[in-house]
Image (cartoon, rainbow, N blue to C red):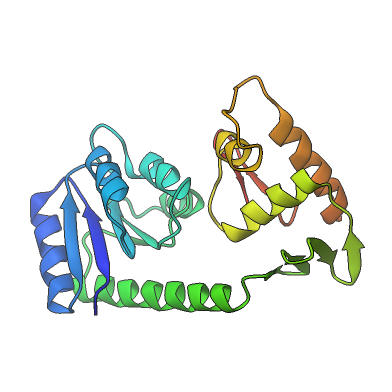
Amino acid sequence: MNEKILIVDDDDKIQNLISIYLQNEGYKTIKANDAMEALNHLKENDFDLIILDIMMPKMDGIEACMKIREEKNMPIIMVSAKSEEFDKIYGLSSGADDYISKPFNPMELIARVKSQLRRYKKYNKDATIESSVIEIGDLTINTDNRQVYVGSKNVRLTPKEFDILELLARNKGIVLSMSKIYENVWKEDYLKSDNNVMVHITKIREKIEDNPKNPVYIKTVWGVGYKI
């Protein structure tokens, strides 16, 4: 087992406890005391999973999760002393895959880590096999012939619309900022005054959504960007 896990928590005791249990299961671990340190680790290392505390100085786990999701799609398990339902929903909507409240049973955390890694490996394996065909609900995107279908209906997209839809689909569940979308599709630096992405998203929704004002596929994450 060579999976590498990043543990982000400002409490050294919790960091060490989680690390010991993970290492006993054969995982490699790297620890970070805050979100900024974690983001630096992510620039230098590839990780298979992140365990991320919410309540931290400098930058909280919610904001950190959103920043990570702009670039990475590995599983993120949020850990927090807050156990209210709203906090769990807020954590998961920011891009986390799972949420566990403090105090927690270390073996429950290990079980969740294993579950998320299994799902992630299966998803990546399936994505590799079907890399030219992306299916999300009734939406089918064929990247070989650049055809899009909703059910049996062929949808005609412009080249830029197709590129945006493919980018979002290949990053399913990850929130992409307008700047990230623009720079990936237009291959130019993004200007805040540029509304090209928003206009194209509107046009795509009109073509693939039954009700563009209440979209099923392309969701707006206010203040952050878009995701499928």
